[in-house]
Image (cartoon, rainbow, N blue to C red):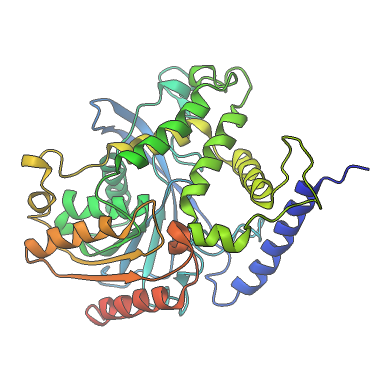
Length: 401
């Protein structure tokens, strides 16, 4: 009899998720309700193209005070969305991706701050993206959706902030790709934020990181179901390519120590099966993660997001690519955090930003945290890390209360 151990593994994961939900419900912002903001205007993009009549999905938590100076914008990473905290009434297990960070009495305390989450343009979670209808053609954008940059996302986000009637944000915060957006906010709209919080991020990708992204994209682009990006028209999905992309990406988010501790060389069977089925626990884990990802994420969005990562380099237009020159006119105060086992965006990336800020005599705090879980550490509940955020946020609040 053949036992589908991947199915058992998935059921175990779902059970763990349910138990995790029961634990997280404590101090949660509770049931949340996303809303859509439609912009009947044109957004000029860095590429020279424009997006017309676009919409952005938004969630907010907490209360905007009378002075409108307690707003914190949280920018999401590659596969996340506007759903930062809480849960949906019709999907109680769909908990926000940073629920451990945002909520009553949590590091970003919603008793104090008005927290804003915006789904990036080009995403697949409700904002205008490749799956959306192009009003010029009355068909889904597909391959016609223009390439985007981090700067484009920031320009779209500022439209939401203006729509909410907020002149200046208390802080812009993000991890990984979200940290790049936070940094870009400080450069593009220096007068519109008081604090910039950058976690496990960088001012530009290394050649190695660009290489990882390119391999992931090629997995999608060469999937026979991709159809040059117009797979919606053919009612297909390049799921196999997306799965491979996710498996590759997921490896880079974990540390060597973390993978060894979680999986080692553990086998699913008593002995080798001499097949190409998943025999090691790490193989089963990666296949499970890839399958789940391909069920909810869009391949065109993945391509857009990774290319925006590659393009980000705010120092490029300055002499010799000087980050110090690029950060010369920022006005916000900064907090940067990196993790010792994060080899995707290692500590040198954060230190480069810190040095450029110090060179410009800007106010910056920096913490390098010895933690085992690699790049994904920024999403986890690490008391040292969370207490640093909590203390910094408490100081932000003290200065506006």
